[in-house]
Image (cartoon, rainbow, N blue to C red; front, side, top):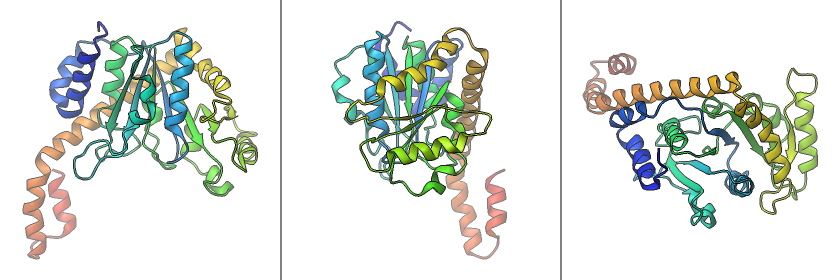
Length: 292
């Protein structure tokens, strides 16, 4: 809570590796909600990390302290973060107003990691003003990011597929701001038009912006669009705070349940598998017993 970066790093590691011990620490931090959390999500290859890097610049120019949680796929061998998004953001390593943490998904679905909400709470307690949460590249139904964020930024790009892909549910239902990145590519304007048409006549009309994270084109307008929600958050908007805290409660409970299940399932599954192979039990019955 004094902003000690090494203490923050150790606390996040504890949350990743020993959730039960971390819970005692987290309970002493008080209610979350001081930091504004922006979820950055979208399919793989859309340039999310480069976009986050540009948003760091934009918020630092305002004098705000920025935390980043970058969730990566896990290595199947070590369980660690496979891509390591911090590699893309190394130019911020000397800035004491920026803290970037890569986290492995460790098999967690929905584009997040088991300890994502805990990391956000720890960065919040450490005094960061804005926390950028970059998810694993995800599909149309993996949208847990909406639960723990105050504002969700959905990143798309030309060439991902035809207009049918754009119109699918899931990602296209959770965003507060939509971005067509890589604006220099052919089809960027057409994709913006297609996305705008999806919201025409609907109850909501989120902004759809064309940007180039590589060149910085459109980043300032993007930050201003995100900051419409940050202004509401800063003024005490209860709905935004409830959405985020509710999501953190669900994610924390789910993580604890999965940890308890994992602690007993491996050896038990081996014994049940022996019985299935010997013909003494069906797979369905084994699954029911494993879940008890």
